[in-house]
Image: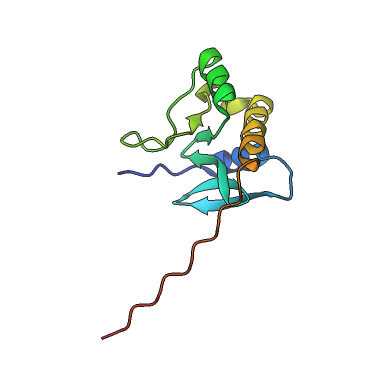
Length: 124
């Protein structure tokens, strides 16, 4: 599976769409970026595509009124996430509005428990 790499402009567009909230955290993910609240991802960048995790009602509204796209690898798009329309790549306001809706949706979820560190395997 080929992982698309975002350009620096894509990364900056993504970061600028993430709400300015102390609970929002942007982290690298597989050569791309993810935005998290309480350990749960609410938005991600996959190549130039921004994907968001919306409430069911917001996702239906977005998909009914705009040309969305799958989010993630073509062979295996990420369930529960929808890719924002390509035509919004130059529309920072609309992108930020939907990323904020995703933040609000995911912020309601219980915090994700941190993974326990893997036990070190003894060396032979």
